Image (cartoon, rainbow, N blue to C red; front, side, top):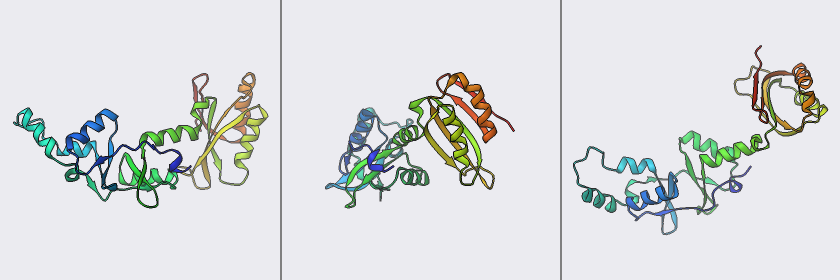
Amino acid sequence: MLVENWMNRNVITVDANDSMMDASKILKERNIRMLPVLEKGRLVGVVTDRDLKRASPSDATSLAVHELLYILANIKVKEIMSKKPITVPFDYTVQEAAEVMLKNRISGIPVVDHQGAVVGTMTQTDLFKVLISLTGVGKRGIQFAFLLEDRPGSIKEVTDVIRKYGGRMTSILSSYEEAPEGFRHVYIRFHDIDRTRLSAFKEEVKKAAKALYMVDHKENKREIYVG
């Protein structure tokens, strides 16, 4: 899944010579936490709500309100922005963008084209949307987590049982994180299963593989299997 398909294309920016007050107003009005900073149309930095808080006078200041407003109106964005901004190209995968954001501990990142022009932004909210889409949460249905042997055909053995009971796969995700050597965690979400035979299905699928838990989103029921 590419960044260009999930990024926010309605890019809201601020000029390097705009005031700190201007940037603060935009962040509040747009309910966002990061602004790409441009100078003559070129990306030169980013300013975040944290940058603004660090540059703002403390609550313990003895300055009068009009003095505070004067200061905020005269501090330029380029004086408080983070220079050498971290970016990702539009043709990165979403997973690569998430890795960059996690590594640098940032909640949002400008997306650029091959000439360095800003074409979008990617935020934590956008990543959550991708996660929801990948896991098929919107489809409801049933989700099972399994610990499967890391060998060809192990997933098929489980999906064959699901299909036997009329189930249709919505998503299949796997991970080696925290799994014993030679195994992997597999998360399968499916729907349209014959619910009149749900108990029989659960017994059969647990014979085919080690089930860790089941979440029935339609009935809002959860079962955790131990051992």
